[in-house]
Image (cartoon, rainbow, N blue to C red; front, side, top):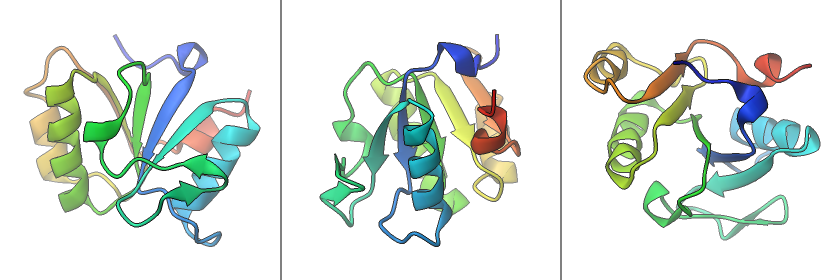
Length: 126
């Protein structure tokens, strides 16, 4: 399987932030500029970059194609479990958001696709 980013339209960003110096904001603006429909996920904000923000993956609409994690691994693991239980199957962990525990857990989910280590901003430069 694998994640074909050219087929991805709607991307949820777990760890989105209003701080322009943090990757949760840099990635969001980069993907938005490239034409993706981005959905910020953060319990701290109602709006980020003019976009309605979801408090948790539990609130996301069902038609999200990919969930990008830009959070500490312990938060990512919890949100990953929630997202998987909701029916999402494509997950991208930005560098630093992964952990051995997440990688091991991902191996138990044979019907899901994961990306680790690669930066989504680099992978979408086409």
